[in-house]
Each structure stands twice: as C-alpha cells, then as structure tokens.
Length: 555
Image (cartoon, rainbow, N blue to C red; front, side, top):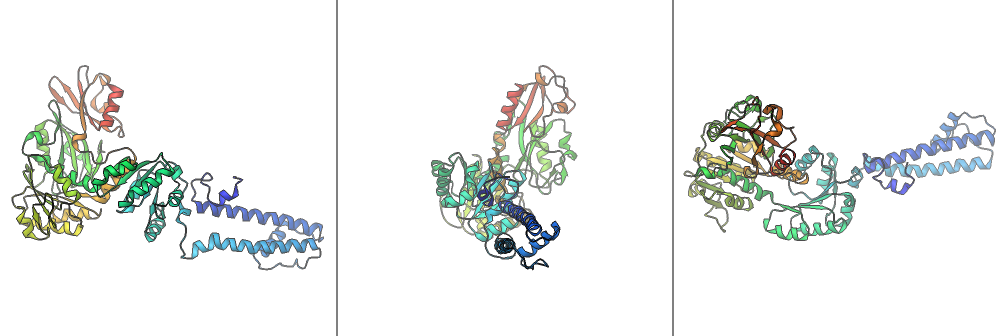
C-alpha cells in the first residue's frame, strides 16, 4: 500500500488504476476507519484489564468503542476509575466527532445533495489517452464510437449541465474551459497521447495551451471553416478535419459514378480487372439480404472487395453482414459482370449517366460537392443568399426554386443545407416534382437517416455518425472515407501461394486486403476452389497501407 497518504487522498492514479479517484478515496477512508476502530478496541481492552481490573472480552471492548465513536452511549462501563482511561475515552469521543465530519464530506454530501461536484473524481486512471476539448456535435455518438474501439479519452465540456449529463451516463467527461491549463491538468494531459479540438475560433488557443504542457501530443482539429487549415497547422495541429467538406466531397463523388464517358466511371483497373462502387438503392433486391446469401458470394466473374455501410468502410466484408439500403458495394471483376450487378442493385430505377446535377445549399459541404463533380457533369446551384458559384437564389423548400434550377431535367440532386427539417422537405418536394432523379443528402442527426430514405433520398450520410467514425479512425491511424480511387488493386507474383486454393489463401479478417482472383493465360478466375499455380498473377485489392504490407510479406 502506498505510504504517501496525501497523494492517495488526492486520487493518485498509480494505485488501483481501474478505480475512479472518488472510489479510491472512499476505499482509503474505509481502510483508515476500520484500522482505527480495531486499534482503539485493542487499546481499550488492554486498559480495562490492566488499569480498571475488569475481565473484558475483545467483543465487548469493540462494542464500547463503536458506541463511543458514534456517540450512541457507553454501556455499563462508565464511569472509569483511572485518569488514563478517562482521558482515552475522551480522546475517542473527539475522534468520533472528526470522523462524523469526514463521513459527511466524503460520503453523505456527494451522495445525497444536489450540489455541484468535481466530475474529475469520476475519472478512471489514464495513460496514453485522448483529450477532447469540446465537441460541437453529438457527444454521445462520438464517445460510444471511441468506447467501441477501446480508445481511452477524457472530454472537457464547457456546458456544466451537458458535462454532468454525460458523466452521469457513465462517460469520462468533466466540466471546464479547455483554454485554461488547469482544466487540461485535470484531464491528465501529461499522460495523454493526443488532443482533439472542436471549439471553433478557440481551436488555435487550445492547441497552443496544450502543447506548452505536453509537446509530444498528436493534435487533431475539427473545423467548419476549411480556410483555417493552414493557420491551425501552423500553430501545431497535425491533422485538420472539416466533416462538412468531407461529406460534401463524398456526395459529389457519388454523382460521378455514372458520368458521360466510360473513362470517368471511377473504375480502378488492372488489365481486364475493374473495381467499382455499386450503390444499393432502397428498393433493390439486394437490400436486407446477407452478403453470403447474395449472388455476389458465388459469382464466377466477381469478387466483393469491401462495402461502405453508413459511411464506414468494411474491408473485407463479413459474409454475415446485411446489405442495407444506402450501402455501397465495392466489387471487382470484368466490366460486363460489374455492369450487370450495378443494374441489379439499382432496383426499380436503373442507373443513369449523370450529366446535369442540382446542388441545394452552397455552404462548406455544397462547395466541396461542386468541386468534386466530374468534368463531364454540369451543375446548377441553389442557395438562400447570393454568392460565388450560386446560380439560383431562393428557398429550397419552394417548388418554384427547384423548378427554376431545372430539377425536372436533372439526373441527380445533392442536398447539403444546414437544417435537417429543411433537407427532408427539399427531398420530399424534389421527389414529387420528378421521380426520375437520384437524390443524395447530408443530414446532421444519426436518427434522421431513415427519415431521409422515407422522404425519397437514395443515398444519405449523417454528419454526426461520419464525424465520430472519422475521428475514431484518425486516432487509430485509419481512413474512414477513402473513395474508390484511393483503393489500390495490384497484380502480384503468386509463387508464394502456389498449390493453395483461393479459399485457403484468404487472409485473416483484420488483414485489410482481399484476394480478388487469379489471372492465368488471359483469364480472370475468382472461384474459391481455383488452385493457384506457378506463373499465375494474383490480383489483390486494399488500401495503400495494407497493400504495402502485403507486398512486404509476399512480393
């Protein structure tokens, strides 16, 4: 047991680190109290035998000490004959009064009064954790994601009521101003490995304050203003993330999946092997079906490389995963086979080449979507205020505004307005004006995604969900929104796998790459029972990092 009692009562995290500081304090208090009672019991028993001449049992002495400490009486032992015993009993009485005050402060007041308390008492011991300085989105969604991935954290929240609510719900949250060094100290910044700032214009100040206390921190800053990127990096941010811009860019890329020319369809190619994203619409026969029960699982000319599910990249895909509406399947194979599965996944409305896109909302997300459009796609933009690149000034909730923008002639509508209710209404109005259009929409709340589908959207990304996953993956060194162009597909010498079937050669689920198939004499073979031979070329798909690891091991 530690000998530095002052540190122990302050919540020294090196002792029983799995307990919170308050739990350690209560435990130490209980140990001290029990030790004191036992010591007094032994001394009282010895005094009654030697000084008072009474043959006391140890249990009667224990009872008398407890009665004295709690001021409930002294039983049949009083009065005492010797001065020493009278002084000792008086000392026990004073000790009882002190213990009473201590019990009120340590146990009673925090448990039964609604007075403010130091939420840092509830923090478990930290080491190599992440400090989150404000989070202006849905904190619960982010913290759930971090806990799911076993990322240890402390959230500093400036709103006392929100901090109390999060702490009461079991999250590691404290109240304070993250610009103050004292609050960072309470969050154990010396032991932290990274800090996340999402405090608007205060980001730079928080980064500078944090780095003065721990210059080894990895710094990730969230911003709604991409123009602040250079300034935040200049003061020490290692990564600057703009979720709205990232989601807008993703929506813009989705409209380019069916552009005017085959070269702009977004396919990555190796020889005759192509890799493409295939959107599963809400009325698709694939929706609601497990991967292992679809034709993709046994198709002779196709391999399912990965899938986007609610903005999260699964690579490889668990065969038991259910294909949901809004999923994007990443398939590899011949062009003809991919075209077939794309038409099948499209549902009642066949996929079409997007030549004219309407973008509703020209904030950060809308501008990012506009810049991500393929060169062969023209865009008409709508915003409530006039500005650069705004073609139609008006309210997207007004059918006339959408008609002025040419919604009936457009093949796709990208909705990136700032309010979810406005987005829902804009989607519903657009769907009443024309059913022959693909609608891609950004929503803030995670619960709004199903509502957007009900309103008529074909593809939905939630800012709250994507932001949480983006940050969690950034902290783990992974990329959450890698477009198909950033997936690599390579041909490698298959000698290391010769004699094994494709099924036997499949990597572990956490490898992060997929064996797409085998090229042999101009043919592309994907069946699981194909036996790999010397001279074959193995086609492998994955991210840059996982492909490099594959090449390091087997090339």
